[in-house]
Amino acid sequence: MRFVNRQPGHGGRWLLALLPLILLLAAYATGSALRLADNPEDKLLPSAAQMVEAIDRMAFTQDERTGDYLLWADTAASLVRLGLGLGIAALAGLCLGIAAGTFPLLRAPLSPLLTLLSMVPPVAILPILFIVFGLDELSKVMLIVIGITPVLARDLEQRAREIPREVLVKAQTLGANSWTLVLRVVLPQLLSRLLVSLRLMLGSAWLFLICAEAISATSGLGYRIFLVRRYMAMDVILPYVVWITLLAWASDHLLRRLNQWCFPWSVGEKP
Image (cartoon, rainbow, N blue to C red; front, top):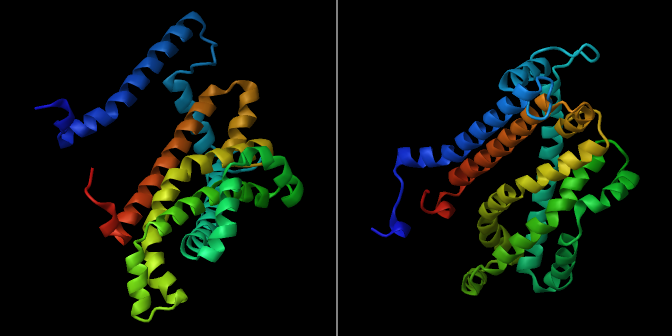
């Protein structure tokens, strides 16, 4: 059998998925042991015991100044900002994508504008957002919205334009007006793609959130990472990075399951 046709079994798939992680952990453990053997005060590659101690301090010990459990308080603050940003961006991107993809008169001005906006580096306009929206929550949410809405809208526009013309003509022949056409034909086709696009944009959304929190915030996962970096507290930074990765993976998994549940016809063959 040719290599291109070979498929891993269920157990083999899990083993292959975990293998890179196992190798990465083994490499880190080896490097940490070597550095700590030379210098027990080394902070660059903390041991597992040091990171467990830091997790206990951040997640399960009340902060003396605020009385909060810092990891959970930071997580809640970041997830609220991320949820608001993704929700607003999803709604705006869906509306703009439908408008640009369905109506030629709206496509003419919107499509070039969305293309132009999607090329603007969102982090570059962060100072402008702080000036316009202030240093509170709104500027952080707006960075996520501005960063991913144009990309979402362009992707949904393209999906709307891929709907066969014959389908639209048949709907109009059966008496559908423009509003009915959008609600009964275009929207069901785009909702599944919206969930897929949100999955693809999760990494960018987290990046924009961390950047905003690092510059101006008093809570949040990005704020905490950049606060402790001045002390080279890698025993805190590394668990926070792992925790952010787990949150992003859980969000991706949730969106994938939601897509499978709401739109099973669009998922296709399971991997």
